[in-house]
Image (spheres, rainbow, N blue to C red):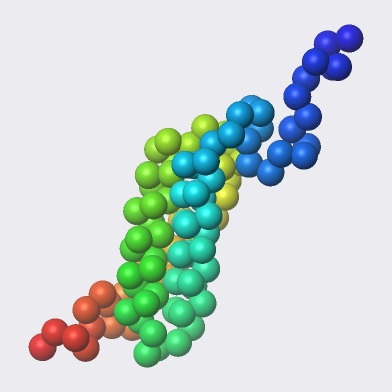
Length: 104
């Protein structure tokens, strides 16, 4: 009965190997949160500073999270967060950039 010895991965949201990954989970949460902030603020032209900075930091945390990620579920969430961060970053850059209106 080999199936009786397999870990139950259906109840685990992030760790499919049955081990805790607190650093990877924290990076995933930060990346997804920053990606959501970047995309939401990208809809407003005057919030380009928040959008571009949140997107840039989300891209950096997502890239490092991909580098140290262990499970497929972590990588999937990080890719979603990275994509949202990148979209928010690029739209924020198109609306004025990281320092638009502050310098000059």
